[in-house]
Figure 1: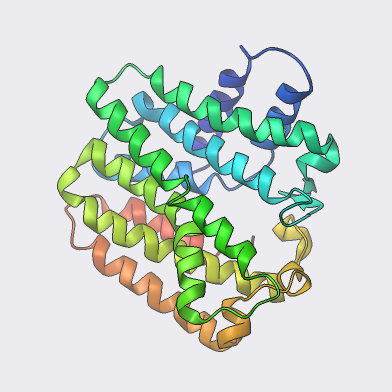
Figure 2: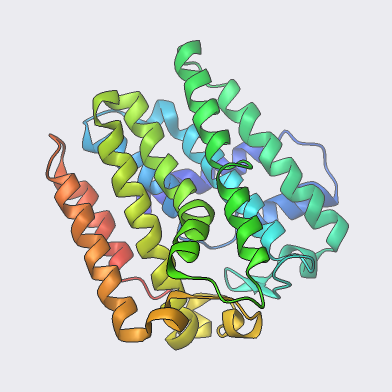
Length: 282
């Protein structure tokens, strides 16, 4: 995993170099190359690897996924959204620079994701499929819808069904699409398996986040703990309690394992990734 992360970071740096110099480019580099898990691009690359494909041709798809994820974090942290001071162990983009620069940096990363994929030398039909699915997942019917509902339920108690709807979109869409895109490239017949795994994994990841926000170590997390309570947000912990939330995480991971073993892939690569996520402390 460390080698893949190094390749990703090197390529992300290369993709930023041709951009015009200025504060926006600095802010893009600051946020995109900040220490992070690179979870979504690693998921994408490891699904490709599980089918025995050479992932290097598709490294820029992984980079585009990370650009979109980083743009969403920059905008999530803004005063008009979560108003956070820390992200990935350092000051948030608007705190390091300013609010206007952070907004433009987020916009620019979303835009750069499109151009990065358009420049990949692959079949045009596949390229359009990738772009269509990726920007559906991150758009107003996907991640942005989840963010909208998350804001709508501040200072208002969400039911379990409403909370699942929020996080199916806010967190699940970008994790699921990382698997879906790899399936479109490697084995379209397995698309539904990867969709199920992606959304179950996304929900498990979010429940873990809710748990860590209560019991996690701020230094290890790289962001402020207790922010959900401070922002009056409904969480799985507030609805279910810590013990039941942990049981839900285990149930969701078990569902992922069942779907993984239903496919003819290198199971070990995906199980290694799931183990890393299960044991995360940040």
